[in-house]
Length: 128
Image (tube, rainbow, N blue to C red; front, side):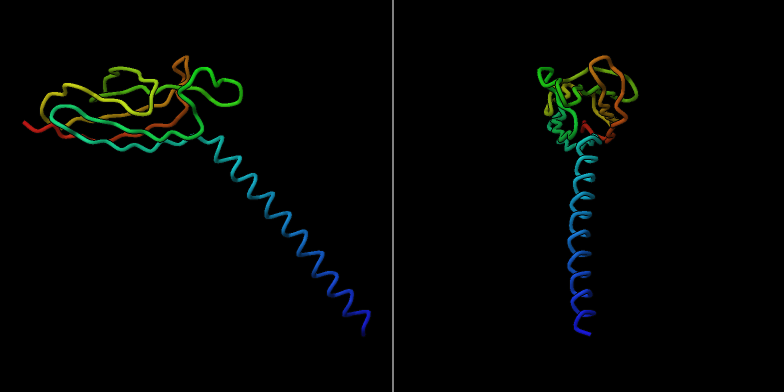
């Protein structure tokens, strides 16, 4: 009976250790996956006929000097379905929009304009 209790305790201890290692491996793989999967979060604010845009882009850098391990890209701005300009920064201003409602689409592309598949769309209303 004493031997049975020792084996049971040893087995529980061994399984606990193995499950702890497995959990840390899974967490490492999840964090590695989230670093490789780019995401884009956008905040915008309208002031007069200008739109101030701030972006948080994960997994892709705007700096071309960091090309070693990270993906490098830029943002393409689409205004009312028309490609208007490209930017290489996380904050920018869309200037001199005419009054009315406008659709803004931000698309993340690489330096050769190949899309990463990360986009964000929002509407802005410029008062008269």
